[in-house]
Image (tube, rainbow, N blue to C red; front, top):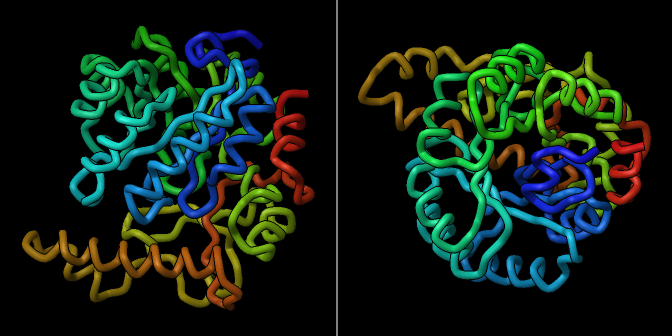
Length: 315
């Protein structure tokens, strides 16, 4: 399974264990690296910069020969910790950074100075060309099968469009739960895949057993879009609680979002409320089950060690 991505990251299989808010952690990434794939953690999973620094050092110490790990950065103004996170990552070092939700220009410039590669989330050709011009090392093509905040285009349409028009590697994000899915994405022109939802039901994930079991019990048909988390459509499991609260923004939010002066603050409040609800559902015993996941949980039929999930994906 040698591709441009395996060469770029010096890994055995062209797979990145996707960074997942609240879910990804050091134990998962260690097992991912030892299984021959790359692992990635959102920097926002750490409350302080000191905690982030400790995580970087632990992963570097545990990295096997041929292993690769990275961190995800939210690079827009909503992440007030961004500049500090970037500084710590560049000081301590890792193999790659994945940027989301903003211009990656500063991240690319600073990371390249210390030999860190930068991959950028995009949902269309317009932004893919922009990040390519800025010097990105690869594109993360977020399609309409991704978990969480996803794109609008199908995997085939997006991969073919980007691989045809861009000269840097395309990594497909969304819709991969088994080896056949990986083969399909590579056949469209992708050089690798980013896989998240199947790893929620891993033994190493820091979420409740209820969340993990939900990824086993529910399938692709149970994934729906909701505006009740961040104000932007996001995929969640259609639990009874989600059905009860509905998936659309309230009438008041709808009215306020039309006001240019208030729109920014409404989104910030909705994001804060939604993230707290998601965190509580993922880490505590609660009936308010707002569990983020993508349709690739269709192939999840048991809670397994991360290393066994990797084996399922490559064999």
